[in-house]
Image 1 (cartoon, rainbow over the protein chains, first blue to last red):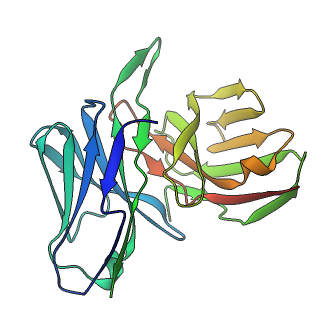
Image 2 (image 1 turned 45 degrees about the horizontal axis):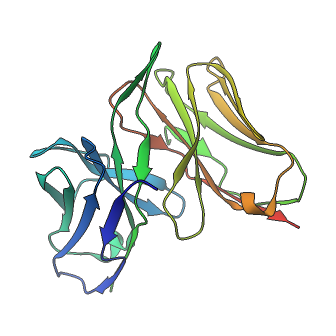
Length: 118
Length: 111
C-alpha cells in the first residue's frame, strides 16, 4: 500500500467549530488531493496541491481551506463546520509517470476520515 | 446534469456470473478512463486504466471505452465473492490529474 495516513480517522464535532484533517505521505509524491464522498455523488474534489505552498480549488471548495508547508503533509481545514460537511474525506497522492503516447497519473488513496457535524 | 453518470445499483449476482458495469459521460474531451474498486470503509484503489478508445484486459477484468458513444464499461468474468465492492469509474481531460468520478456502483457477489 502507498504510504498515506489520515488523522483523525473518526471525528464528531458541533456546528460552528473549526476542524482540521491531516494527510501524511511517505512517498514523496508531488501531487496531493482532498476529496469528499457522499451517497449519490461519488468522490468530489475539494482542493489539490501540486507542490509545497501551491494549491488550487476543486469543484466543492466553498467552506474549506488547505495548506501544504511540507511535501509530506496536506491539511484540510473547515473554518466553521456545518452539518452539510458531514462526509467521508479522502486524501490522495500522485506522481506523473510517462508512458509511450500517454501520461499516466495514478492516484493512491488514503483510508479516509469519517466526519460527523452535529 | 452530471458530467459522469453511473448507476449506483446495488447490483447482486451469483458467484461465477459475468458482471457488466457502465458509465456514460457528456464531455467528449475526456481522454483517460479509469475504474477504481472500493471495499467497505476503505479508500478506492485503481483497478484498470485506459487511454482513449479500445479494450484492455487484465485477468478476469476487461475495460472498454467507446468514445463515439461516450460510454465506458467494466466486465468481470467468473465473478467471486471477493469482488463484492463499490466500483467507481473516473476520467480526466489531460495530463493535469484532476479526476471526475461517477457515483459508484455497489456490487454484491453471492456464493
